[in-house]
Image (tube, rainbow, N blue to C red; front, side):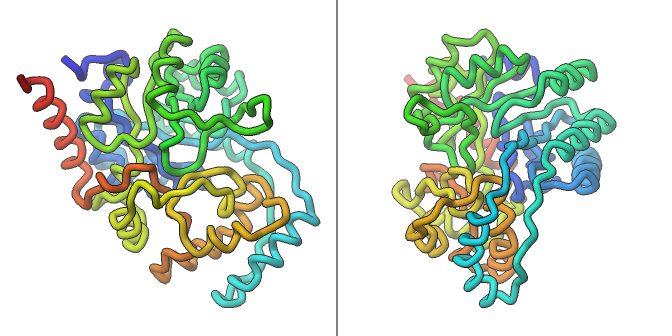
Amino acid sequence: MWSDTKITAQLGIKYPIIQAGMAGNTTPELVASVSNSGGLGTIGAGYFSSEKLAEEIDKVKLLTTQPFAVNLFVPSKKHIKRAQVDLMNAWLNPYRRALDLEQPVVNLSETQQLEQQIDILIEKRVPIVSFTFGIPDVHLIRKMHEHHMIVMGTATSVEEAIVNEEAGIDIIVTQGSEAGGHRGSFLKQEDGEYPMIGSISLVPQVADAVSIPVVAAGGIMDGRGVLASLILGASGVQMGTAFLTSQESGADIAYKQAILNSTETSTVLTNAFSGKMARGIRNDFVDYLSTFRGEVPEYPIQNQLTSAIRKASTANHDHSLMSLWSGQTPRLATSRKANEVVESIVQQIEDMRFQS
């Protein structure tokens, strides 16, 4: 059976389909629906406080008895450059005045937050945790393993995949350049840039380079993408945009419509919203920051500087200032229930398997 892979056995799921942890856009209903349908739902907890994380886990547990995961961000260890922040604030203040917003205070407390989040996962007996933006410290990986948690990492190159395996990560999500949202890259290349490798090249090379299971991510929207990924050597797939427009998704209606009305040429890579490169639909905010001649503050600083602007835009259902993260396959996006997305994928694969 196509669904009998290393990760279905390891994660205790029926189908090798993982819903990506889309921070800010997952809901307990979405996570539970995917898990109840045989896939692996994921709580996107990157921006959660400890209290919010505990609350979200409890809500998911009320809706499903199946395995689910929590996605967390690895601390970036950046430093605030005051002149850089002041210059960016000068550029953002016109938006803040128009939206009646105050200038935010930047803080860098990610390391302590991550350790608190992991303690909550242990307390709540969450079976699976995934990480992006790097690899957690070895002592944290060891701590999670001691509590029988499966730890998943993210890689955008073979080198990053190998480092994940050496650190003790159990499963690697290979994020191709087609993927929507933030790049999970953490090792720069010789030219100082981060990797941008498409999934059809990345997946088989990573699968050959490591001994642990590989999950393909990036532009996968239907059964064709899932089956192709398995053929390339992946043990499963991680899908974000396909679930982002589902009825249970927490994305604003204007955000969902922007994806549904987009094409394969609509997305760009930008660091305008967060300071970290991410793929999303081009809009007025991206265009405005593209004319900025200074250095955009790195994540999480820029993310904090633009947060209130993005939230106000969402409250007004105005997609011109939203971070519209999307992969490169929006033409295949649909507005339906999450369980119907999973069922459709399974049916497509079954139909392809039995075609003459």
